[in-house]
Amino acid sequence: MGAAFSRTMMSGAVAAAVAGGVYRALRSRPRPGRQRMGPPRTNYAGRTVDLYAGPAAVLGAAAGTAVLPLPARTRCAALLAVLAAGGCGAYDDLAGARDPRRGFRAHLEALRGGELTSGAVKLFGIGAAGLLAGALLKDRPVDRVLAGVVIAGTAHLVNLVDVRPGAAAATVLALGAPGLPRAGLAAAPMGAVAALVADDLGERTMFGDTGVHALGAALGVAIVAGRGRAGLVAHAAGLVAAAAYGDRISRAVRVLSDR
Image (cartoon, rainbow, N blue to C red; front, side, top):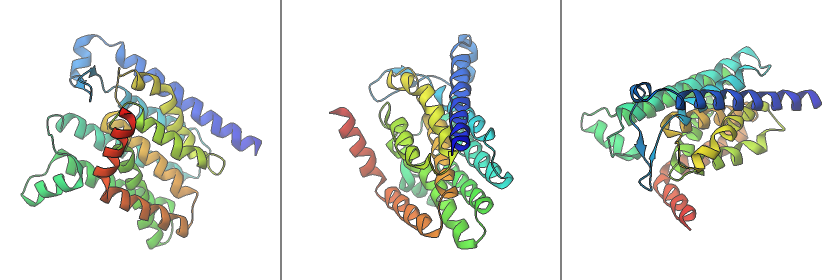
C-alpha cells in the first residue's frame, strides 16, 4: 500500500512539474513566437486569455502516466488516449477558432450537409482513439467497446463543463479523487490540473479543447482500468446520457458559476 501510494504521488508530482514548466516556457516566449501558436482568445467575460494551459496539460498528463510502473498495454492505451485526444482538440482549437457551432448535433448536421467541420474531426478522432485504447485495456469485444465509450465520453464530459474558469479543473479533481486508492492513473491528470488551475481561475489562460479532452481521456482510462463490465456499463450509460443532455449540463454549470 505504501509503495503504491508513493508511485501515485510521484506520478502527480511529475505531471505537475512538467505541466507547470511547459506553461511557464510558453508564456515566456517572445510575442511573435506566441502568435505562431495561435491568436489569443476572448473568454466568456470578454477578457483576453491564452490557450497555453492546453498543451501544458497534455504533456503533463502524458509525463505523469509515463513514470507509472504499468503493464505495457495499459501504458500504451493511456498515452494513446491522452495524446490523440489532445491532438484532436488542438486541431479544433486552431482550425475551428472562428466556427460558432458547438455540440454533437451542430457538427453532425453540418456533416449531413456535406461539410466536415473541425469539431466533427475532433469527435470522430477521439472516438476512434478511445476504441483503440479500450482494445488495449480489455480482452472481450463488448468490454472493449464499453471502454471506448467511457474514454471518449469522459473526454466529452470535461469539455461540456468547460464553460467557466475552474469548472473543468474541478471536474477532473472530483472525478479523479475516488479512483486514487484503486489505481494511480488518475494522479497524472490531477497533478497537471493542480499546476495550472490558479492561472485558469485567474483568467490568464484556458485549457481549450486541447487540454480538456486530453484530461478527460486520461480520466477515462483510469476509470476503465479499475473496473469490470458492470462498472463499465454504469459509466457508459451515464456518459451517453450526459452527451444527450449536454446543453443542459453546460447551462447548469454557467448558472452555478455565475451565482
